Image (cartoon, rainbow, N blue to C red):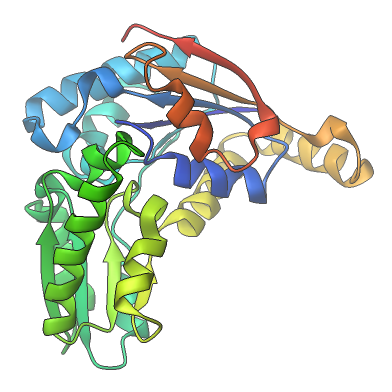
Length: 275
């Protein structure tokens, strides 16, 4: 069973890694839409048009579901994608609900791209779950794009994270929501500055669980047969799905994409695709 996972760059690989680690029997096609990056600088209309085109690409790949592993694309354009295809679509939303439940000091920061930070959906989620918490919505227009250019931009990324983290420390933040899938790739840099007293929340586990729920609902027989086969051959290489990496920019960033994949042995191909 094949699943499509997309993002503007490398960020969605945090979601792909979580899916592959928990459900290695799935085949995964990853699209890094580098040619259209950064998504955070695009208009809502541009993102909606682009996501519809991405949906057509995945339909041609014969995937069973599409994971929009990008907060910006989810809040700005997932409804347009859902209206254009019959495939199950799984988005990623800022994990504010668990953050508010975990925060002991009731001081939560949400770090996002500008499009996500200003989105009505994020503010709806915060209003729904914040209760008596103090919430600081923070954004960076460059961090996601700079993470895509790692390691050449390592120092710039570190400087941005230092600045953001110092702002959080000054506000006595004890729970941080990483509301962009790129940010967990450098979670260790936030942890180094913020320390163990600050919980850092990211959405990969929740998205993975939602994907399996949707696959089970949409393809009950196929999933049942697949899981039966997996249980009968628990230690078999037959259970290992493959990962294919695609980029709309070509092979320029392919080495970087490869470097962020935890199970590199599962990568079976790299492709340049035109969207």
